Length: 181
Image (tube, rainbow, N blue to C red; front, side, top):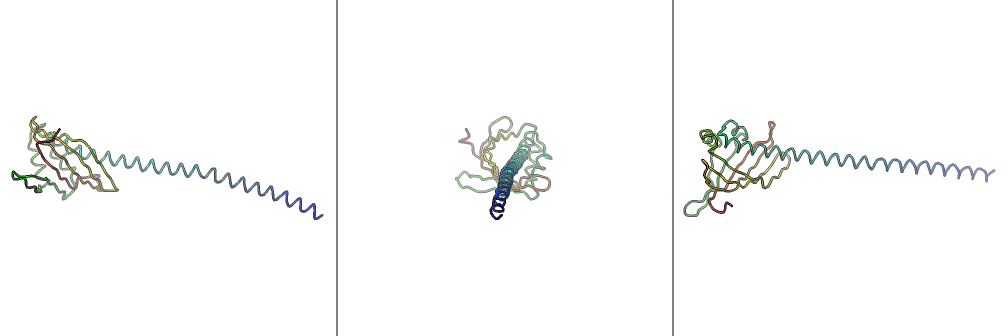
């Protein structure tokens, strides 16, 4: 009788062991792809969100320069954050470097008084970095005024993502007449 009981015990233990093994394999082989899919979805959402932010940042900067070409002061004013800062690095005739600051309102007014097509700043998006609600953008440019080359340089933008979207919070540029090709 003990022998018969031992055989039954071994028989059922093997079945239970196989059942648990099967359940273990089933759980982990099905769970792993789900984790991979979730991870892929998270990565895709992150990449798509970053691409959307990059496109939105570019669109704000492009709106600034389109507004300049069109002498559209309303469009230009709308891309700046409240209390935005505009600065230019200048070199005087003695070779001294200084930083000149201008008010956004003065810039907007000046551009709004130009003839359409007079102020054409031709930019290239070289670097864009985004971290959450902060973006920096580096855009080399050539400036053409009334159809004539004026100067070139680089714009450095800092943008912030406010409740109404990305806005330029800080703009500083360089200006030169040589080394522009």
